[in-house]
Amino acid sequence: MLSRFRDGLALLTGAFVFYTAATGPFESLIQRAIFLALVVCLGLAVYPLGHGRRWRPLGLAIDLAAAGISLVACGYIVVNYDEIMTNLPWATSLDMVLTAGLVISVLEVSRRAVGIIFPVLVVIGLTYALLGNHLPGALAHRGFDGAFVTETIFLGDLGIWGMLTGVAATVIASFVLFGSLLLHTGGGQSFMDLAMRIGGRQAGGAAKIATIASGLFGMISGSAVANVATTGNFTIPMMKRLGYPPAFAAAVEAVASSGGQIAPPIMGAAAFVMAEILGVSYLKIIAAAVVPALLFYLSVFVTVHIVSVRKNLKLVPTDELPAWSAILAPRRVLPILAALGGVGIGVFLGRSVATAAFYGVVGLLIAFAATSAGKMPVRQMLKLILNGVSDAGKGMVIIGVLLAGAQILVSMINMTGIGVTLSSMIVSMAGDSVPLVALIVGGVCLIMGMGLPTTAAYVLVAAVLAPAMTAVGIDPLAAHLFVFYFATISVITPPVCVAVFVGAGIAQTNWLPAAFEAVRLGAVTYVVPFLLLLYPGMTAQGGLLDLGDALLSGLVLVIAIPAILSGQRLFAIRSLDFAVLGICIALAVWPQPVAPLIAGLLLALSWHFGKPRRLALETA
Image 1 (cartoon, rainbow, N blue to C red):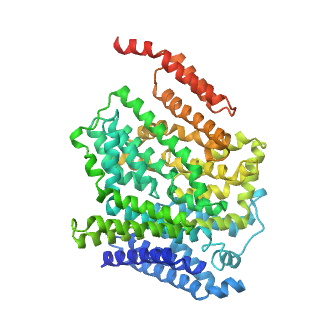
Image 2 (cartoon, rainbow, N blue to C red):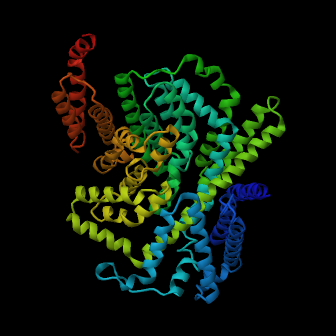
Image 3 (cartoon, one colour):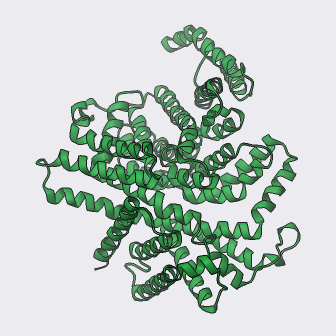
């Protein structure tokens, strides 16, 4: 009974998103209220309280009460939309009850979906808004009562109905639907087969398969942890079967999956949120993220290759690799091309991003039906499509409740001014020094992002820490990408490296060695954000020379950092190798026009002139 209700509600949520992507959204608060009502109710059904336990009847009563008050609260907004937007009403006792009920329901669903850390942060924000006037010193604010907090959160478009919820209810939901349908209609298997064919017969083939597959899945996924759980169940056992160390296998999957969160076009849904916060086009965000994403995956490839050659890790047997003819068959390729072509046409015609996603879905469905007709029963085709819509609806639960909760937290940060206060404290502590501000902000981002999903982590650090960077003259786009990257890589950074936890669980190994392997594999990611501040070309700004400087600097780091961490030989004299690689890294991060070129030449010449000694040692 619950299963059918859950699937029906998921289909209804997916249908609502599909309809509004096609025809355009309703009025802002109406669109957001309907969407939030759907995802909260669906979340309560997907994550039932006390499921499988004796006290489930009590859990069911709590779930029904939460669903009821959420529906009433969201319905109240729909009915009173005109009154709220034109008259800015004072909060009544009923408003405060509805606000409390809706906020508790949203936080409870987010607790069940992603854990306790995020709801606790929101509760801290609410508590600070209500009681922060009692704190000493600079952290104190003027004080706000329950009625004012209710008006901010519930009776306007700054609180729970604000911009983040709006992005979730339109653009992000549309792309969740697009990605889910793409995976369910064969795109997922195509990604995996393509990864196997490209990486399987190279040194460290199974690890490179994991890197490629996780990157492809991660590009359309909203969660690094979910990505590890999906692709890792295939790639990690394959690596272990071929003799790869379990900790290494877990680390490769965790790092590659986290990299998908910084890779266009979705960037864990943060790309859409960033575009709204900065007031720039989505395409500008994507263009700015291309070079750092390429450098990240290239660095993982280089590290995997060095480790694989040194440890003589096995290739994937040829008979386990899919044939190119199967991978490039029209029924496999055309739906993907039609989906991407539909999105491209929508963007080219100047449609909204959500409508472009709708075009992509339509192109995908038409191509899937055309290429599967006669080869697959109609009933099976419909089942795959409905499963895709249903899974999309369930995926929207996490995005919806997280961004609604994040919007509450951001509204409290803005209302109390704590974001400005903390930014001022950081700038004062660093003495207006850009490098020092960047170091402090990067470290705080790693801490604040721990245990949080990508989008929630970005929203939090963007509200609190990005202003500190712009205050010392850093370009806003570079500042937001900087805090986003550091918040994202917290999933592989000890001690709360949740992506590593999942990977280590699949590999059946201790998480601590896996975490250290993950830090080594993803080491370049800790440096790339600083390149964003040094080289405008890293974010696709400036001219061709700026882009060339950024690429050359990044390529040197991509080779030198993995080499120095993995013990790669240049002259086969450890101290000399370490010194040369260290000089290359220093030159690469020195923001002078010729420095990256000198670093590149030094690295290339060292590799060339050290070859005879390396060969002599290998044959000895």
